Image (cartoon, rainbow, N blue to C red; front, side):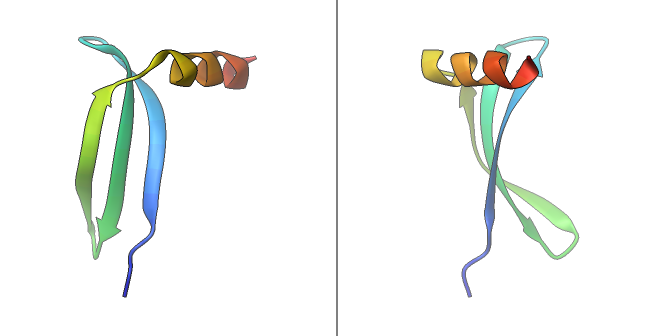
Amino acid sequence: MRKARFDLIAFSSQYGLVYVTFIYENTDIRLITARKAEKWMMTEYEQYKK
């Protein structure tokens, strides 16, 4: 059974905007990837904030 992946763009005080992908496993959160957001992600984030 394939688990649903969740993506989010969040602000980190150390790295600025970051893009994070994760899944829920039972009661735990499993991090798939986290990286500094690319320019198009930053643009999307700014548009969402408005």
